[in-house]
Length: 132
Length: 132
Length: 132
Length: 132
Image 1 (cartoon, each protein chain N blue to C red):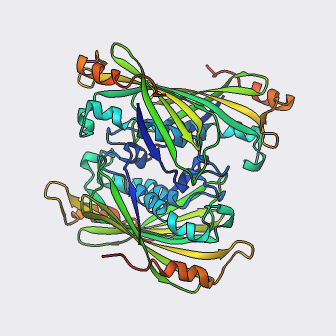
Image 2 (image 1 turned 180 degrees about the vertical axis):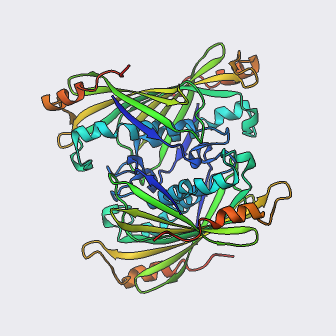
Image 3 (image 1 turned 90 degrees about the horizontal axis):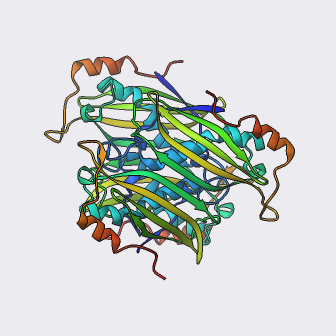
Protein backbone atom coordinates (compact mmCIF):
# COMPACT_ATOMS: atom_id res chain seq x y z
CA UNK A 1 0.00 0.00 0.00
CA UNK A 2 1.15 3.51 -0.79
CA UNK A 3 0.37 6.50 1.39
CA UNK A 4 0.65 10.18 0.43
CA UNK A 5 -0.11 13.24 2.51
CA UNK A 6 -1.81 16.17 0.74
CA UNK A 7 -2.09 19.59 2.32
CA UNK A 8 -5.26 21.11 0.84
CA UNK A 9 -4.59 24.41 -0.92
CA UNK A 10 -6.77 27.47 -0.58
CA UNK A 11 -7.45 27.75 -4.31
CA UNK A 12 -8.79 24.18 -4.22
CA UNK A 13 -11.79 25.28 -2.13
CA UNK A 14 -15.01 26.46 -3.76
CA UNK A 15 -17.96 28.66 -2.81
CA UNK A 16 -19.38 25.91 -0.60
CA UNK A 17 -16.37 26.42 1.65
CA UNK A 18 -14.95 22.93 1.09
CA UNK A 19 -12.46 21.36 -1.29
CA UNK A 20 -14.11 21.21 -4.71
CA UNK A 21 -15.04 17.68 -5.82
CA UNK A 22 -13.11 17.90 -9.07
CA UNK A 23 -9.89 18.34 -7.09
CA UNK A 24 -10.11 14.81 -5.67
CA UNK A 25 -9.45 13.15 -9.03
CA UNK A 26 -6.37 15.36 -9.32
CA UNK A 27 -5.17 14.33 -5.84
CA UNK A 28 -5.79 10.67 -6.69
CA UNK A 29 -3.68 11.03 -9.86
CA UNK A 30 -0.95 12.58 -7.70
CA UNK A 31 -1.15 9.68 -5.24
CA UNK A 32 -0.69 7.17 -8.09
CA UNK A 33 2.81 8.57 -8.74
CA UNK A 34 4.53 5.68 -6.86
CA UNK A 35 2.77 3.31 -9.26
CA UNK A 36 3.99 5.30 -12.26
CA UNK A 37 7.50 4.96 -10.81
CA UNK A 38 7.21 1.17 -11.09
CA UNK A 39 7.02 1.68 -14.85
CA UNK A 40 9.47 4.58 -15.08
CA UNK A 41 11.56 5.19 -11.93
CA UNK A 42 12.69 8.59 -13.23
CA UNK A 43 9.08 9.47 -14.21
CA UNK A 44 10.08 9.96 -17.82
CA UNK A 45 6.74 10.32 -19.57
CA UNK A 46 8.29 9.22 -22.86
CA UNK A 47 8.89 5.83 -21.26
CA UNK A 48 5.64 5.52 -19.33
CA UNK A 49 3.62 2.81 -21.14
CA UNK A 50 0.37 3.58 -19.35
CA UNK A 51 -3.03 4.94 -20.27
CA UNK A 52 -5.87 5.83 -17.94
CA UNK A 53 -9.04 4.08 -19.12
CA UNK A 54 -11.48 4.68 -16.29
CA UNK A 55 -11.89 6.45 -12.97
CA UNK A 56 -14.67 6.49 -10.43
CA UNK A 57 -15.01 8.31 -7.13
CA UNK A 58 -17.49 7.99 -4.27
CA UNK A 59 -17.69 11.15 -2.18
CA UNK A 60 -18.45 10.26 1.43
CA UNK A 61 -17.95 13.52 3.33
CA UNK A 62 -16.91 17.14 2.91
CA UNK A 63 -13.17 17.77 2.70
CA UNK A 64 -11.94 20.81 4.57
CA UNK A 65 -9.18 23.32 4.01
CA UNK A 66 -6.75 23.53 6.93
CA UNK A 67 -6.39 19.81 7.67
CA UNK A 68 -4.10 17.33 5.94
CA UNK A 69 -5.54 14.55 3.83
CA UNK A 70 -3.93 11.12 3.59
CA UNK A 71 -4.41 9.23 0.35
CA UNK A 72 -4.02 5.45 0.58
CA UNK A 73 -3.43 3.65 -2.70
CA UNK A 74 -3.28 -0.06 -3.45
CA UNK A 75 -3.66 -2.46 -6.35
CA UNK A 76 -7.07 -4.14 -6.48
CA UNK A 77 -6.41 -6.68 -9.24
CA UNK A 78 -4.15 -7.31 -12.20
CA UNK A 79 -5.55 -8.34 -15.58
CA UNK A 80 -3.84 -9.33 -18.79
CA UNK A 81 -2.92 -5.84 -19.97
CA UNK A 82 -4.56 -3.64 -17.34
CA UNK A 83 -4.72 -3.26 -13.58
CA UNK A 84 -7.15 -1.72 -11.10
CA UNK A 85 -6.07 0.80 -8.47
CA UNK A 86 -8.10 1.47 -5.32
CA UNK A 87 -7.71 4.72 -3.43
CA UNK A 88 -9.07 6.21 -0.24
CA UNK A 89 -8.83 9.78 1.02
CA UNK A 90 -8.80 10.20 4.78
CA UNK A 91 -9.18 13.44 6.75
CA UNK A 92 -9.48 13.69 10.53
CA UNK A 93 -9.76 9.88 10.83
CA UNK A 94 -12.69 9.72 8.46
CA UNK A 95 -12.71 8.21 4.99
CA UNK A 96 -13.97 11.14 2.91
CA UNK A 97 -13.65 9.68 -0.60
CA UNK A 98 -12.99 6.35 -2.31
CA UNK A 99 -11.77 5.89 -5.85
CA UNK A 100 -10.89 3.32 -8.46
CA UNK A 101 -8.69 3.83 -11.52
CA UNK A 102 -8.15 1.42 -14.39
CA UNK A 103 -4.72 1.77 -15.95
CA UNK A 104 -3.90 0.07 -19.25
CA UNK A 105 -0.43 -1.09 -20.24
CA UNK A 106 -0.23 0.46 -23.68
CA UNK A 107 2.10 0.24 -26.64
CA UNK A 108 2.16 3.75 -28.05
CA UNK A 109 3.88 2.56 -31.25
CA UNK A 110 1.15 0.12 -32.22
CA UNK A 111 -1.48 2.16 -30.37
CA UNK A 112 -2.78 -0.99 -28.71
CA UNK A 113 -3.01 -2.43 -25.20
CA UNK A 114 -0.06 -4.69 -24.52
CA UNK A 115 0.20 -7.64 -22.06
CA UNK A 116 1.82 -6.69 -18.76
CA UNK A 117 5.35 -8.15 -18.60
CA UNK A 118 6.05 -10.42 -15.67
CA UNK A 119 8.37 -8.02 -13.82
CA UNK A 120 5.63 -5.35 -13.76
CA UNK A 121 3.00 -7.91 -12.63
CA UNK A 122 5.32 -8.99 -9.87
CA UNK A 123 6.06 -5.42 -8.73
CA UNK A 124 2.37 -4.48 -8.78
CA UNK A 125 1.32 -7.61 -6.91
CA UNK A 126 3.37 -6.52 -3.90
CA UNK A 127 0.85 -3.74 -3.34
CA UNK A 128 -2.43 -5.65 -3.53
CA UNK A 129 -4.99 -4.63 -0.92
CA UNK A 130 -4.97 -2.04 1.84
CA UNK A 131 -2.97 -2.66 5.01
CA UNK A 132 -5.06 -3.08 8.14
CA UNK B 1 -30.25 17.35 -23.50
CA UNK B 2 -27.80 20.11 -22.71
CA UNK B 3 -24.83 20.96 -24.87
CA UNK B 4 -21.80 23.07 -23.89
CA UNK B 5 -18.77 23.99 -25.95
CA UNK B 6 -15.40 24.01 -24.19
CA UNK B 7 -12.29 25.52 -25.75
CA UNK B 8 -9.38 23.55 -24.26
CA UNK B 9 -6.89 25.80 -22.48
CA UNK B 10 -3.15 25.48 -22.81
CA UNK B 11 -2.57 25.01 -19.08
CA UNK B 12 -4.96 22.04 -19.20
CA UNK B 13 -2.48 20.03 -21.28
CA UNK B 14 0.17 17.85 -19.66
CA UNK B 15 3.57 16.44 -20.62
CA UNK B 16 1.91 13.82 -22.83
CA UNK B 17 0.83 16.70 -25.06
CA UNK B 18 -2.90 16.14 -24.53
CA UNK B 19 -5.51 17.47 -22.15
CA UNK B 20 -4.81 15.96 -18.73
CA UNK B 21 -7.36 13.34 -17.64
CA UNK B 22 -8.19 15.10 -14.39
CA UNK B 23 -9.44 18.11 -16.36
CA UNK B 24 -12.36 16.14 -17.79
CA UNK B 25 -14.13 15.84 -14.44
CA UNK B 26 -13.79 19.61 -14.13
CA UNK B 27 -15.29 20.13 -17.60
CA UNK B 28 -18.12 17.74 -16.78
CA UNK B 29 -18.89 19.72 -13.62
CA UNK B 30 -18.93 22.87 -15.75
CA UNK B 31 -21.32 21.24 -18.22
CA UNK B 32 -23.73 20.35 -15.39
CA UNK B 33 -24.29 24.06 -14.73
CA UNK B 34 -27.65 24.09 -16.61
CA UNK B 35 -28.81 21.36 -14.23
CA UNK B 36 -27.72 23.39 -11.22
CA UNK B 37 -29.79 26.26 -12.66
CA UNK B 38 -32.92 24.09 -12.42
CA UNK B 39 -32.39 24.17 -8.64
CA UNK B 40 -31.14 27.75 -8.41
CA UNK B 41 -31.66 29.87 -11.55
CA UNK B 42 -29.30 32.55 -10.24
CA UNK B 43 -26.72 29.90 -9.24
CA UNK B 44 -26.82 30.99 -5.62
CA UNK B 45 -24.82 28.29 -3.89
CA UNK B 46 -26.56 29.05 -0.60
CA UNK B 47 -29.77 27.86 -2.22
CA UNK B 48 -28.39 24.90 -4.15
CA UNK B 49 -29.70 21.77 -2.36
CA UNK B 50 -27.38 19.38 -4.16
CA UNK B 51 -24.49 17.13 -3.24
CA UNK B 52 -22.28 15.15 -5.56
CA UNK B 53 -22.17 11.52 -4.39
CA UNK B 54 -20.41 9.75 -7.23
CA UNK B 55 -18.66 10.31 -10.53
CA UNK B 56 -17.21 7.96 -13.10
CA UNK B 57 -15.47 8.61 -16.38
CA UNK B 58 -14.47 6.31 -19.25
CA UNK B 59 -11.65 7.77 -21.31
CA UNK B 60 -12.01 6.67 -24.94
CA UNK B 61 -9.46 8.77 -26.81
CA UNK B 62 -6.87 11.52 -26.38
CA UNK B 63 -8.23 15.05 -26.16
CA UNK B 64 -6.23 17.66 -28.02
CA UNK B 65 -5.50 21.32 -27.43
CA UNK B 66 -6.52 23.53 -30.35
CA UNK B 67 -9.90 21.94 -31.11
CA UNK B 68 -13.21 22.65 -29.38
CA UNK B 69 -14.88 19.99 -27.27
CA UNK B 70 -18.65 19.62 -27.05
CA UNK B 71 -20.04 18.23 -23.82
CA UNK B 72 -23.48 16.65 -24.07
CA UNK B 73 -25.34 16.22 -20.81
CA UNK B 74 -28.61 14.45 -20.08
CA UNK B 75 -30.50 12.90 -17.18
CA UNK B 76 -30.21 9.10 -17.06
CA UNK B 77 -32.74 8.37 -14.32
CA UNK B 78 -34.45 9.99 -11.36
CA UNK B 79 -34.62 8.25 -8.00
CA UNK B 80 -36.36 9.20 -4.79
CA UNK B 81 -33.83 11.76 -3.59
CA UNK B 82 -31.11 11.46 -6.22
CA UNK B 83 -30.67 11.54 -9.97
CA UNK B 84 -28.11 10.25 -12.45
CA UNK B 85 -26.48 12.48 -15.05
CA UNK B 86 -24.87 11.07 -18.20
CA UNK B 87 -22.25 13.07 -20.07
CA UNK B 88 -20.27 12.68 -23.27
CA UNK B 89 -17.32 14.71 -24.51
CA UNK B 90 -16.96 14.96 -28.28
CA UNK B 91 -13.98 16.29 -30.22
CA UNK B 92 -13.59 16.20 -33.99
CA UNK B 93 -16.73 14.02 -34.32
CA UNK B 94 -15.38 11.39 -31.95
CA UNK B 95 -16.69 10.60 -28.48
CA UNK B 96 -13.52 11.00 -26.40
CA UNK B 97 -14.96 10.49 -22.90
CA UNK B 98 -18.15 9.38 -21.20
CA UNK B 99 -19.18 10.17 -17.67
CA UNK B 100 -21.86 9.60 -15.07
CA UNK B 101 -22.55 11.74 -12.00
CA UNK B 102 -24.90 10.97 -9.14
CA UNK B 103 -26.34 14.10 -7.58
CA UNK B 104 -28.23 13.91 -4.29
CA UNK B 105 -30.99 16.31 -3.29
CA UNK B 106 -29.78 17.25 0.16
CA UNK B 107 -31.17 19.13 3.12
CA UNK B 108 -28.18 20.96 4.56
CA UNK B 109 -30.10 21.82 7.74
CA UNK B 110 -30.80 18.22 8.71
CA UNK B 111 -27.70 17.02 6.85
CA UNK B 112 -29.75 14.30 5.18
CA UNK B 113 -30.86 13.38 1.66
CA UNK B 114 -34.29 14.76 0.98
CA UNK B 115 -36.97 13.52 -1.50
CA UNK B 116 -36.96 15.40 -4.79
CA UNK B 117 -40.01 17.71 -4.93
CA UNK B 118 -42.32 17.17 -7.88
CA UNK B 119 -41.41 20.40 -9.71
CA UNK B 120 -37.75 19.38 -9.77
CA UNK B 121 -38.58 15.85 -10.92
CA UNK B 122 -40.70 17.30 -13.67
CA UNK B 123 -37.99 19.75 -14.80
CA UNK B 124 -35.31 17.05 -14.75
CA UNK B 125 -37.47 14.55 -16.63
CA UNK B 126 -37.58 16.91 -19.63
CA UNK B 127 -33.90 16.16 -20.17
CA UNK B 128 -33.87 12.35 -20.02
CA UNK B 129 -31.66 10.69 -22.61
CA UNK B 130 -29.45 12.03 -25.38
CA UNK B 131 -31.02 13.45 -28.52
CA UNK B 132 -30.29 11.47 -31.66
CA UNK C 1 -6.76 44.03 -29.99
CA UNK C 2 -7.94 40.54 -29.19
CA UNK C 3 -11.07 39.76 -27.22
CA UNK C 4 -11.99 36.46 -25.57
CA UNK C 5 -15.07 35.57 -23.58
CA UNK C 6 -14.60 33.37 -20.53
CA UNK C 7 -17.50 31.73 -18.71
CA UNK C 8 -16.34 31.35 -15.11
CA UNK C 9 -16.47 27.76 -13.92
CA UNK C 10 -17.78 26.67 -10.57
CA UNK C 11 -14.55 24.95 -9.53
CA UNK C 12 -12.74 28.25 -10.13
CA UNK C 13 -14.51 29.86 -7.15
CA UNK C 14 -13.07 29.70 -3.65
CA UNK C 15 -14.39 29.90 -0.09
CA UNK C 16 -14.76 33.68 -0.40
CA UNK C 17 -17.50 32.99 -2.95
CA UNK C 18 -15.66 34.64 -5.85
CA UNK C 19 -13.32 33.47 -8.57
CA UNK C 20 -9.98 32.66 -6.94
CA UNK C 21 -7.22 35.15 -7.76
CA UNK C 22 -4.84 32.51 -9.06
CA UNK C 23 -7.34 31.65 -11.81
CA UNK C 24 -6.89 35.05 -13.48
CA UNK C 25 -3.33 34.31 -14.59
CA UNK C 26 -4.67 31.11 -16.15
CA UNK C 27 -7.42 33.03 -17.97
CA UNK C 28 -4.87 35.59 -19.16
CA UNK C 29 -2.69 32.80 -20.56
CA UNK C 30 -5.76 31.44 -22.34
CA UNK C 31 -6.51 34.88 -23.80
CA UNK C 32 -2.97 35.12 -25.20
CA UNK C 33 -3.69 32.13 -27.48
CA UNK C 34 -4.30 34.37 -30.55
CA UNK C 35 -0.80 35.78 -30.00
CA UNK C 36 0.67 32.27 -29.82
CA UNK C 37 -1.08 31.59 -33.15
CA UNK C 38 0.97 34.39 -34.76
CA UNK C 39 4.03 32.24 -34.02
CA UNK C 40 2.43 28.85 -34.70
CA UNK C 41 -0.96 28.99 -36.46
CA UNK C 42 -1.62 25.33 -35.65
CA UNK C 43 -0.51 25.87 -32.01
CA UNK C 44 2.22 23.27 -32.34
CA UNK C 45 4.17 23.71 -29.14
CA UNK C 46 7.26 22.18 -30.74
CA UNK C 47 7.32 25.17 -33.06
CA UNK C 48 6.38 27.88 -30.57
CA UNK C 49 9.58 29.91 -30.02
CA UNK C 50 8.25 31.74 -26.96
CA UNK C 51 9.06 31.87 -23.28
CA UNK C 52 7.14 33.68 -20.56
CA UNK C 53 9.55 35.85 -18.58
CA UNK C 54 7.25 37.93 -16.40
CA UNK C 55 3.64 38.44 -15.44
CA UNK C 56 1.91 40.96 -13.23
CA UNK C 57 -1.73 41.40 -12.30
CA UNK C 58 -3.62 44.19 -10.54
CA UNK C 59 -6.84 42.97 -9.00
CA UNK C 60 -9.44 45.75 -9.07
CA UNK C 61 -12.69 44.06 -8.04
CA UNK C 62 -14.18 40.70 -7.15
CA UNK C 63 -14.97 38.40 -10.05
CA UNK C 64 -18.23 36.52 -9.77
CA UNK C 65 -19.40 33.10 -10.89
CA UNK C 66 -22.49 33.26 -13.11
CA UNK C 67 -21.46 36.20 -15.32
CA UNK C 68 -19.23 36.10 -18.39
CA UNK C 69 -15.83 37.79 -18.34
CA UNK C 70 -14.32 39.45 -21.40
CA UNK C 71 -10.55 39.47 -21.63
CA UNK C 72 -9.08 42.18 -23.85
CA UNK C 73 -5.52 41.62 -24.98
CA UNK C 74 -3.17 43.92 -26.88
CA UNK C 75 0.53 44.42 -27.50
CA UNK C 76 2.04 47.17 -25.37
CA UNK C 77 5.48 47.40 -26.95
CA UNK C 78 7.92 45.36 -29.01
CA UNK C 79 11.58 45.10 -28.02
CA UNK C 80 14.52 43.46 -29.74
CA UNK C 81 13.76 39.90 -28.71
CA UNK C 82 10.76 40.33 -26.42
CA UNK C 83 7.35 41.97 -26.39
CA UNK C 84 4.93 43.18 -23.74
CA UNK C 85 1.29 42.11 -23.65
CA UNK C 86 -1.38 44.13 -21.82
CA UNK C 87 -4.59 42.47 -20.68
CA UNK C 88 -7.81 43.56 -19.05
CA UNK C 89 -10.59 41.44 -17.59
CA UNK C 90 -14.07 42.98 -17.72
CA UNK C 91 -17.20 41.74 -15.96
CA UNK C 92 -20.55 43.53 -15.88
CA UNK C 93 -18.98 46.63 -17.54
CA UNK C 94 -16.32 46.94 -14.88
CA UNK C 95 -12.60 46.36 -15.34
CA UNK C 96 -11.94 43.76 -12.64
CA UNK C 97 -8.26 42.97 -13.33
CA UNK C 98 -5.36 44.26 -15.40
CA UNK C 99 -2.30 42.30 -16.40
CA UNK C 100 0.99 42.51 -18.22
CA UNK C 101 3.01 39.60 -19.62
CA UNK C 102 6.52 39.73 -21.04
CA UNK C 103 7.07 37.09 -23.71
CA UNK C 104 10.58 36.36 -24.99
CA UNK C 105 11.34 35.11 -28.49
CA UNK C 106 13.59 32.20 -27.62
CA UNK C 107 15.82 29.82 -29.52
CA UNK C 108 15.41 26.51 -27.71
CA UNK C 109 18.43 25.03 -29.54
CA UNK C 110 20.90 27.61 -28.30
CA UNK C 111 18.80 28.22 -25.16
CA UNK C 112 19.08 31.99 -25.71
CA UNK C 113 16.74 34.87 -26.52
CA UNK C 114 16.66 35.50 -30.24
CA UNK C 115 15.85 38.74 -32.13
CA UNK C 116 12.25 38.92 -33.32
CA UNK C 117 12.15 38.41 -37.12
CA UNK C 118 10.53 41.22 -39.08
CA UNK C 119 7.38 39.26 -40.04
CA UNK C 120 6.60 38.61 -36.39
CA UNK C 121 7.26 42.27 -35.45
CA UNK C 122 4.95 43.33 -38.22
CA UNK C 123 2.17 40.92 -37.19
CA UNK C 124 2.46 41.92 -33.53
CA UNK C 125 2.48 45.64 -34.31
CA UNK C 126 -1.01 45.37 -35.80
CA UNK C 127 -2.31 44.75 -32.29
CA UNK C 128 -0.68 47.59 -30.39
CA UNK C 129 -2.96 49.29 -27.87
CA UNK C 130 -6.56 48.74 -26.84
CA UNK C 131 -9.39 49.81 -29.15
CA UNK C 132 -11.56 52.60 -27.80
CA UNK D 1 11.04 33.79 6.67
CA UNK D 2 8.63 30.99 5.85
CA UNK D 3 9.57 27.92 3.88
CA UNK D 4 7.19 25.45 2.19
CA UNK D 5 8.01 22.36 0.20
CA UNK D 6 5.87 21.65 -2.85
CA UNK D 7 5.95 18.32 -4.68
CA UNK D 8 5.04 19.15 -8.29
CA UNK D 9 2.01 17.22 -9.49
CA UNK D 10 1.75 15.54 -12.86
CA UNK D 11 -1.37 17.46 -13.89
CA UNK D 12 0.54 20.70 -13.27
CA UNK D 13 2.83 20.00 -16.24
CA UNK D 14 1.95 21.18 -19.75
CA UNK D 15 2.83 20.16 -23.30
CA UNK D 16 6.25 21.77 -22.99
CA UNK D 17 7.05 19.05 -20.44
CA UNK D 18 7.53 21.47 -17.54
CA UNK D 19 5.33 22.87 -14.81
CA UNK D 20 2.94 25.33 -16.44
CA UNK D 21 3.67 28.98 -15.60
CA UNK D 22 0.18 29.67 -14.29
CA UNK D 23 0.72 27.07 -11.56
CA UNK D 24 3.40 29.18 -9.89
CA UNK D 25 0.95 31.87 -8.76
CA UNK D 26 -1.13 29.07 -7.22
CA UNK D 27 1.92 27.68 -5.38
CA UNK D 28 2.83 31.16 -4.18
CA UNK D 29 -0.70 31.62 -2.79
CA UNK D 30 -0.30 28.27 -1.03
CA UNK D 31 3.03 29.36 0.44
CA UNK D 32 1.44 32.53 1.86
CA UNK D 33 -0.77 30.37 4.11
CA UNK D 34 1.47 30.98 7.19
CA UNK D 35 0.88 34.71 6.66
CA UNK D 36 -2.87 34.17 6.47
CA UNK D 37 -2.57 32.30 9.79
CA UNK D 38 -1.22 35.49 11.42
CA UNK D 39 -4.63 37.02 10.68
CA UNK D 40 -6.73 33.92 11.34
CA UNK D 41 -4.88 31.04 13.08
CA UNK D 42 -7.68 28.62 12.25
CA UNK D 43 -7.78 29.88 8.63
CA UNK D 44 -11.42 30.90 8.98
CA UNK D 45 -12.04 32.81 5.75
CA UNK D 46 -14.93 34.67 7.37
CA UNK D 47 -12.39 36.25 9.69
CA UNK D 48 -9.59 36.82 7.22
CA UNK D 49 -9.46 40.60 6.67
CA UNK D 50 -7.20 40.42 3.63
CA UNK D 51 -7.48 41.21 -0.05
CA UNK D 52 -4.95 40.50 -2.77
CA UNK D 53 -4.29 43.70 -4.73
CA UNK D 54 -1.34 42.79 -6.90
CA UNK D 55 0.95 39.95 -7.88
CA UNK D 56 4.00 39.76 -10.08
CA UNK D 57 6.24 36.86 -11.00
CA UNK D 58 9.61 36.67 -12.76
CA UNK D 59 10.22 33.28 -14.33
CA UNK D 60 13.93 32.46 -14.26
CA UNK D 61 14.12 28.81 -15.29
CA UNK D 62 12.00 25.81 -16.21
CA UNK D 63 10.42 23.94 -13.32
CA UNK D 64 10.45 20.18 -13.62
CA UNK D 65 8.11 17.43 -12.51
CA UNK D 66 9.81 14.85 -10.28
CA UNK D 67 11.81 17.22 -8.08
CA UNK D 68 10.59 19.08 -5.01
CA UNK D 69 10.30 22.86 -5.03
CA UNK D 70 10.96 24.98 -1.97
CA UNK D 71 9.06 28.24 -1.71
CA UNK D 72 10.64 30.88 0.52
CA UNK D 73 8.33 33.64 1.67
CA UNK D 74 9.12 36.84 3.58
CA UNK D 75 7.67 40.27 4.21
CA UNK D 76 9.27 42.98 2.08
CA UNK D 77 7.69 46.05 3.68
CA UNK D 78 4.68 47.09 5.73
CA UNK D 79 2.60 50.11 4.76
CA UNK D 80 -0.32 51.78 6.46
CA UNK D 81 -2.99 49.31 5.44
CA UNK D 82 -1.07 46.99 3.15
CA UNK D 83 2.08 44.88 3.10
CA UNK D 84 4.35 43.44 0.45
CA UNK D 85 5.30 39.77 0.35
CA UNK D 86 8.39 38.52 -1.49
CA UNK D 87 8.61 34.91 -2.63
CA UNK D 88 11.20 32.70 -4.27
CA UNK D 89 10.79 29.22 -5.74
CA UNK D 90 13.88 27.01 -5.63
CA UNK D 91 14.40 23.70 -7.39
CA UNK D 92 17.66 21.73 -7.47
CA UNK D 93 19.52 24.63 -5.80
CA UNK D 94 18.44 27.11 -8.45
CA UNK D 95 16.05 30.02 -7.99
CA UNK D 96 13.48 29.26 -10.69
CA UNK D 97 10.93 32.03 -9.99
CA UNK D 98 10.56 35.17 -7.91
CA UNK D 99 7.31 36.80 -6.91
CA UNK D 100 5.80 39.74 -5.08
CA UNK D 101 2.27 39.98 -3.67
CA UNK D 102 0.58 43.06 -2.25
CA UNK D 103 -1.96 42.18 0.40
CA UNK D 104 -4.41 44.80 1.69
CA UNK D 105 -5.87 44.80 5.19
CA UNK D 106 -9.53 45.23 4.30
CA UNK D 107 -12.72 45.92 6.19
CA UNK D 108 -15.35 43.89 4.36
CA UNK D 109 -18.17 45.71 6.20
CA UNK D 110 -17.22 49.18 4.99
CA UNK D 111 -15.58 47.70 1.85
CA UNK D 112 -12.51 49.85 2.43
CA UNK D 113 -8.84 49.32 3.24
CA UNK D 114 -8.26 49.56 6.96
CA UNK D 115 -5.05 50.50 8.84
CA UNK D 116 -3.08 47.49 10.03
CA UNK D 117 -3.48 47.12 13.83
CA UNK D 118 -0.25 47.16 15.80
CA UNK D 119 -0.32 43.46 16.75
CA UNK D 120 -0.47 42.46 13.09
CA UNK D 121 2.33 44.90 12.16
CA UNK D 122 4.43 43.45 14.92
CA UNK D 123 3.79 39.85 13.88
CA UNK D 124 4.50 40.61 10.22
CA UNK D 125 7.69 42.53 11.02
CA UNK D 126 9.22 39.38 12.50
CA UNK D 127 9.37 37.96 8.99
CA UNK D 128 10.99 40.84 7.10
CA UNK D 129 13.62 39.76 4.58
CA UNK D 130 14.98 36.38 3.53
CA UNK D 131 17.35 34.50 5.83
CA UNK D 132 20.87 34.13 4.51
